[in-house]
Length: 131
Image (tube, rainbow, N blue to C red; front, top):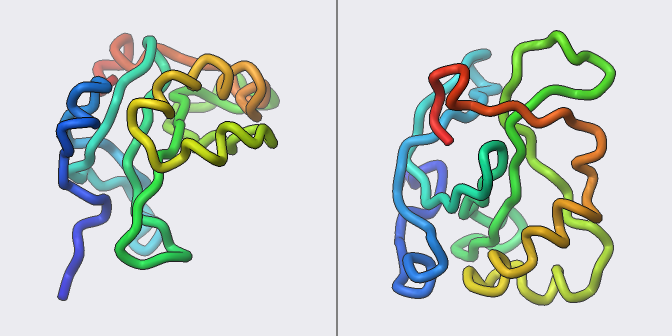
């Protein structure tokens, strides 16, 4: 059975929180390029998005991942791409990682406390890419 790269079920709670299905770009490490794949996504601001992902530790379960479109601070002239941000060590964020409405409520805190300080956000629309 060939599962999609990301969970594609869009729940009523996710839709109410601002998620929708769209194609996103992801790195294809196996083939050394980029793929466009369908996913359930909630854009946040110009340079952030939350992506619903499969949980590799628990098959059949999902979690939400915050990503930033940008470059590493050490290489500001590099081509921007999507980077997954690690959640900060805040207990409340771990508790809400599977709840679409609550994760959206905590995005500002996640961005402020997370490892996004390692990145310089860029606007994907200026590069003619998806949000």
